[in-house]
Image (tube, rainbow, N blue to C red; front, side):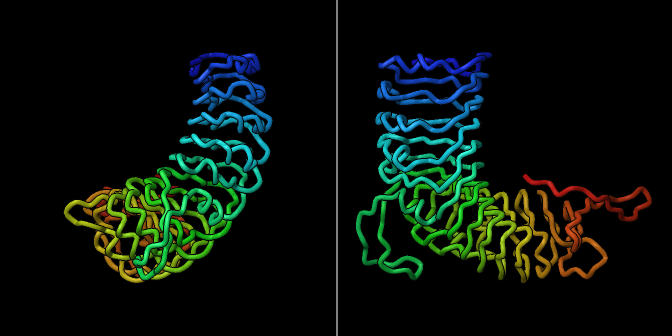
Length: 355
């Protein structure tokens, strides 16, 4: 092993490091080394390669595909560019951790068919990737059989196994829709596809992802339809962000889960087309943002936490929230209610915070 990460190393990444034919772990992360990735053709023994937070440039060498024993590849926060060739990343049968976030990769999402049997964590956010979400997800699973039973009214769904726990694809140019086959990734505990061009509805099979125990982030896409009731089956989830889409209909009251042992803490639905009465459970969450949905109605006074809602401005509002943390008007301006020394109400315009 050669572990020199978090040191004040500078200069060019020496290609001679890769001449160590028995090297298994290489960690030069969080250093000032520059240059491009070397030729890995004689270092097939590597199991962990951590070169995150450096200043590396150039493209991903095809010789990475020679690292058949590689379990961890972390190149996060560099300036590496080019495409993610399927023949490179799709030929690593032992890969469990892949992090290429915050680089300059472009082109279509890689199909990770040959690498999918052990992959647990995939981080590809903040690049310039395109391609179809459905094809990518289907490349991550191994189909076992087709059961005769049904789920949520969908019959003959093929079951598949995937060890994937974290999938982050934020801030790219990915298109397509969330496929019904998403239920194949039943081990997911984090699912982030924010800031893309994903359209269509949220499939009811999302409810099978019962291991989602932290976050679901679909914000800033082109999703339509209603919020599926099946989201309430995610009984371990803490954070849901569906903001800045084109979702319609009511907020399902069932999202609140068990009122005595709630797990959901953050619900962000701002800037959609939601309507109807705001469910009571929202008053008991730690952070709620529902502004930009002009047809929501009801009265709120949260017992605790932070709530942003359409309760400000001189125009007529259907939502009464005297205890809200921020009240927003029809122009998107948000105000923090304050009480003056004379007892009158005043308001100070503020930027809407993002948690």
